Image (tube, rainbow, N blue to C red; front, side, top):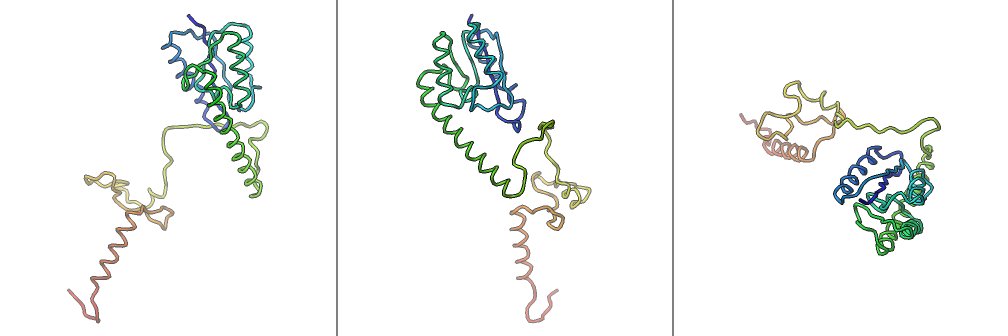
Length: 228
């Protein structure tokens, strides 16, 4: 049975930490399907793929040098490296030692993958760098701090599975029914939101309201005559 080392990574502290767990779950499922044996697992949290100087990657390279693995497996090539030179060097180092490089997305990595996908990943890295630099310049011109978290602080992303309530809806609707009408069309609001309370109206309601006002104007009596 071939010995397999799994590698997982995500880029910045703005991403969900569960990303690594998801990658490992999917990779382990594929490793079991292939009949390989997972012997080592390496991860890098909030580490860019622009460089190979990552704790998890260094540990992976040490395991490769020690000859304790037969396969290096990751979710995709861009998880290993986005640098065209680094991914080519990694591939050559593994091939020299007879170690197979494979990913869940690309399958068994070949020199063709290194040439084509490595170039695409490098272009994406360059585009991301340009966009990041432009965003930092914009924040600086707006008088905002362009850096990340201060020393001693870290970002924490929490998800509870619930959407954030628009409290103005609760104030603008009667208690009963609160949100939805009891008609067959359950997606039709029972009472339209009030723009005076900071809740924007849907376009469909605005069109119906405009048509209703037009009908009222056309039904008004003319020349001062009154109708019953």
